[in-house]
Each structure stands twice: as C-alpha cells, then as structure tokens.
Image 1 (tube, rainbow, N blue to C red):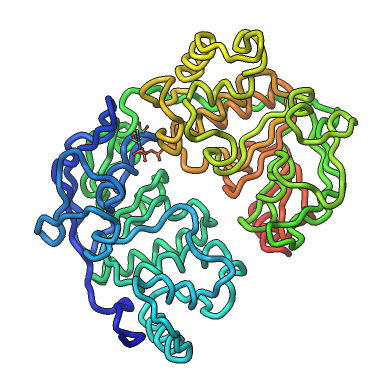
Image 2 (image 1 turned 180 degrees about the vertical axis):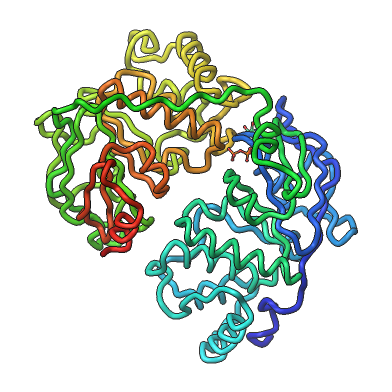
Length: 513
Ligand SMILES: Nc1ncnc2c1ncn2[C@@H]1O[C@H](COP(=O)(O)OP(=O)(O)OP(=O)(O)O)[C@@H](O)[C@H]1O
C-alpha cells in the first residue's frame, strides 16, 4: 500500500443524514424517545437541549458508541448499519469532542498521519509533508505542521481536530460544543470557516451547543430536545432565541441572578505567596504567583487555556505539590489536604469533576455524601456509612440543585456531563463555605444551570466566602468578579478591580502583553 492509498480529504462531498425513530432506554430510563431528525447535506444543524436532554445519547447512537433500543440511521437516503464507530467512519461520519484527543508531544503532521486507519509501516516524511501541504492548501484552516501540538494555542488545536476529520475524509461532522475552549474571536473564526465549507457543499455539520448566539449566527437549522424527545426545531431564520429557550426548558423557572452585595471585606482570607509548580513533564507551569482573596470577594482569574491555570488549580486542590511558595488562610499556613480543608472550610470544583472530584462507579448518593461521610448523621459508630440519612440528604440536594438522575442509587458516571457537575457543586456548596475555589464551573452547562450556578457562587460570596474563580470564559469572569487577575505564561502580572476592568486591556494581558 502506498502512503497515499488512504483518503486525505478529497473524495467525498457533504453527507446527508437522518435518524428515524431513534430510541435509547437505559434500565428504567428512556434517555431518547422516537427522535427523528433530518440533517440536509451542506448545512450546519444545531442540536439544543438542557443538560440531560439526550443530545450526547443521540450522537453516540449515530456514531455507533451505543446501540439504539429502536430506530435507524439513514445516510444519503439509505438505511445503514452502524455497529461501531468504525462503521460510522466508513460512511463519512466523524466526531470532534469537547476535549482534545491529539497527542501533545507529536507534531500536527505526525498526529494526522497516525490517525489513519492503516498508517504506513515505514513513513516517508518528505512525501507525507508534501501531501499534507497539498491537503492544507484546499482547506480553509491552516495550522503549523511541524511543531509539537503542545505548543499550539487552543484555537489551533481545535482547528487541527477538525482538520483531522477532514483529512480522514469524514464529510459529516458531529461537533460537541466545539467552541467551549475557544476565545470569542477564535470561535467566530472557526465557525465562520466551517460555515463556508458547508455552504460550498463540502461538509455537513451537526453541532451540539448551549450558546444561542452561535446558533443564531451560524446554524441553518435547529433541533431541540427535551427529556429525550424532540420538542421543536426548523430553520433558525424562522425562530427567535425566546422561542428556542422556551422549547428547551418548557415551564421550568429560571432563577434570577443573585445580586452582588456591596463589598465590605477587609480581611484577607486566602493568600498565595510566591507559588511555583511544574507540569507533568517537569516544566515550570506556575511561576511565582502572588494573590490575595478577601472575605466576601470573588477574584476571577482570566486567561487563555494552557497558561498554567490547570496546574494552579491542582496545587490549590492538593493534587499537585508546589515547588516553591506558601499558601495561607486567615494568616495561618494552609496545606491543601483533606483534614485542613475541613478545618478551614475550603470547598471547590476542579476541572473534569467526574475524574477529579467523584468516584465514577459509586452512586449519586455516595458521591454527594463523600465530604460528610465521616460526620453524623451519615457516619455511624465503627466507621460505617448509614444509608438512610445519606439517601435522604442526597434526595434533598438532588431536588434543590435539579440534578437529573433516575434515583439516588444510580452510578454517577451514568449522569450527563452537566448533571455530574451539578451534583459535585451541590456537595461543595451546601455547607458553611469560607474559601471556594472553582475552575470553569459552568463549562458545558445549559443556560438555566449557568444562571443557577453563578447565583450560587455569588450567594457564597455575599455570605462572606473568599472565592477564587478560574475561568476561560471572560464573560463569566467579568460578570462575577470583584477583581480580575490575568494569568499568562504561568504568572499573574495584571490585577484590576472590576470597575476599572476593560476587555481590551484584559485581552492584551491574556496575550502576554
Ligand atoms: N450509560 C448510561 N447509563 C444510564 N443512563 C445514561 C447513560 N448515558 C446517559 N444516560 C442518561 O440519559 C439521559 C440523557 O443524557 P445525555 O448525556 O444524552 O444528555 P445531554 O443532553 O448530552 O446532557 P449534557 O448537556 O449535560 O451533556 C440522562 O438522564 C443520563 O443520565
């Protein structure tokens, strides 16, 4: 086989896809009920719905990750059997995930070549690079081919994930919240270019999104799911944001945003003094960070992803050692270990909560009880957990935080992404909180939940908690913070009170100026 015997993004045109009566039942839960959608070739079709509405389940059935209980997929008007993701790929259907799947230490060129189903045993790099350059010539995006992926920006990585699918000749792309890791400028650029490809008839897109702005600006058609059913949709040009949001949430009430009480806090609660830390590869990732957070204050750390924020959060949540520096709470030395977190009432939400803040196989009730399992009434004598009070507590929090789960006894890993997030936040926000450390708390949440969670964070601040909010969403930082700190290249060199904050200066500081 020659190095170019496999597709390199030239042969197919936009693919048409329909689902017919798609139904997926998990045990007693009907996650998807009789959903039929028609994605016309050369269109950008948005899939909207609250957390837990069934969006991921629908696309997993299309991709062959799940076998539907009933229903079928039609490609180009013909029914096809998709038993595995490999079958989906063979029909030109590819998926781009929220999180990156590229190998960071390899270059873009290496990532593309090894992504082929049958990469050549001996790679003739000269020939491959020439082929890749010719391929990129035909593509609307450009990315540098020969530098390690780890040195690309989030926008470039996202473009490369999309290019990889096009290189594999997938002409029906499923995008799962493709812009959640991008700045608004990058999001507009990527969506604009993709839309150009759909309009040229080269590509069809089904895009899961929670952002009405993007749906209104870039999608041709929309399908709205609620509680596993298709509740509406059609041409975006014929619908308003109001109509779409009403379809999404029905008569659920959206909580009014909590108002910010005047900031009176004088007392420094949390202090980071000269904090340094390294990443997994032993490279400096956090560089001498000094920051003070007062009681009753939210300090928002803005920055483009990959500038040390994740490492900083890992240090603060006890998942990574500092190489230098100290942490203080109320002037006392603070080590982020369980016992001290309990003593100082430190709570938080790390990134990827299912992985970092939950035990996936354990039930929702157990995961919610986790922080209080050694306190009465859940703790019984001799160290056993008491199931009744634990379930009762879980039921109360499930109701208060509107967590969608079939029961308290469901393994938490079966919940939709947004509902896992809500469950962990319910656990973390429901007690007396003095210090709250949250990373991207609204990542992947629907608009009603965003409103709810931001209000909960503001409530904690109003009650006197010191809040450190690390977020890649600048709008979120600007909405919640009393002061904005910008992280770039591992350091914090720009801190500004919210009243003096302007997007331009923050943007410049984010870019390292
Ligand atoms: N493997 C599974 N086992 C049991 N239940 C599941 C499984 N996967 C999903 N579910 C349930 O199916 C329902 C739909 O979940 P799905 O992940 O499709 O929602 P979603 O619309 O993608 O939500 P989000 O916006 O939060 O990602 C949820 O109630 C979820 O708990």
